[in-house]
Length: 276
Image (cartoon, rainbow, N blue to C red; front, side, top):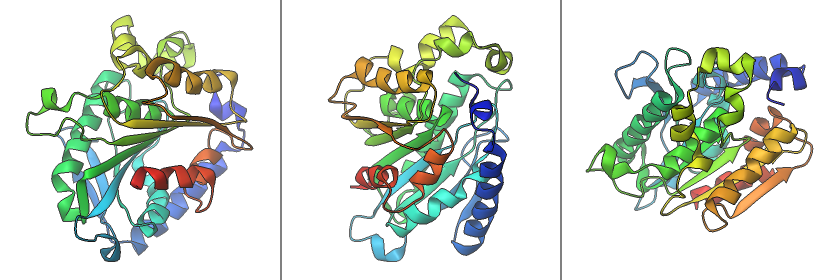
């Protein structure tokens, strides 16, 4: 149920194409690459400033994309291709890396993303964006991290930050309860989840956020566990915080990322709604 590479035998073709397209985007769009947002070696991000014509008087929206890979694989460099259509739609885009398991635990990775979002808020104006219009998009493990950013108590982390730093989030094939992963040997070998970490880092086990909204999308070709996880977050947080839970026909665990980068696709339109 959680072995996506086995379920999609052609997964390597996705990764190769993403890497090639992303390299072209980094050459064609102005970007700040490998900017430090924290002290760890992998606490680096790529930032694509908003197009000048989209900035207006207040500034453009800013979208942060968090990659997946079960917190133990992949890299932001595979996902620059996502920035191009979001940039064309008028957004500033930030793609952070994070330390991979087992060198960091999932709660530690979550705090790294808190630092990345704080960096994004502090640098939004420089990127031509409005710091009051920050949204987060996450795929798979990134879906867990995106939901955690919506639930974050920002004032505890830094009293200078606004309580509602993240206004909205989009989870693509998100993982909202980590308990099943603790019992999945191929994952637990690297994740090394403890009961306390499951409680601390499972969005569905935390109080619903005080504000904001989360859209939860999953591909119809994904496993029953991913379909269940997608429904679970709305059951836990309610329809006010999770107004949209959808199963998108024809998509698997990897093609849903392609759909995000495809203008006109329902997944892409959901990202545009975050920008508004």
